[in-house]
Image 1 (cartoon, rainbow, N blue to C red):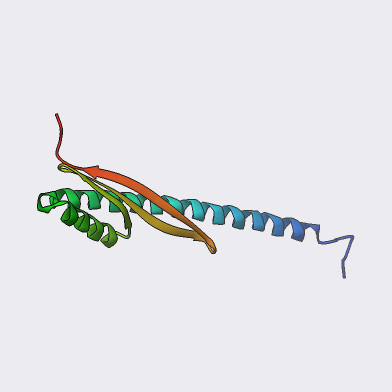
Image 2 (image 1 turned 30 degrees about the vertical axis):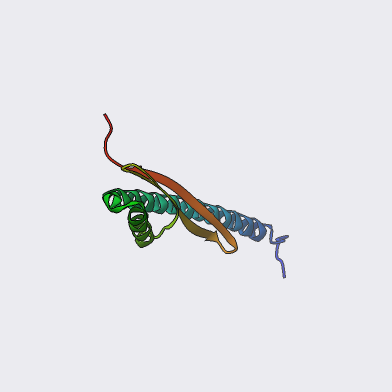
Amino acid sequence: MACCGERGGASVCLLAVGLVFVLFGTFGAAVGAAGVARQRAGVAADFGALAGAGAVAQGPSDACRWAESVAAANGGRLTACRVDGLDVQVTVQVGVSPLPGLTRIAVVTARAGPVRS
């Protein structure tokens, strides 16, 4: 029973403000998860390219095998590997699900090889 003309308007406003905080928090968490996936893909690509460049003297297939192994150990999946002389270029992807039912892929390409003057 309402007393003195109270109708519960403040409760509805409080619930609306709480919902806005939850939505902004969820959005922020999704953006943060995407950023972390991008960083993980970058690390996996960099290390994979370095491992491939270290094994390029054994042949292109061995270089790409090493790159794939190191990328997988760092949480990535090798999607492309190209050997050009002593240079190795790899593309790695990392999947992220920031929200249930929403999956995104972070893709990074890295190159490693000798320094050119």
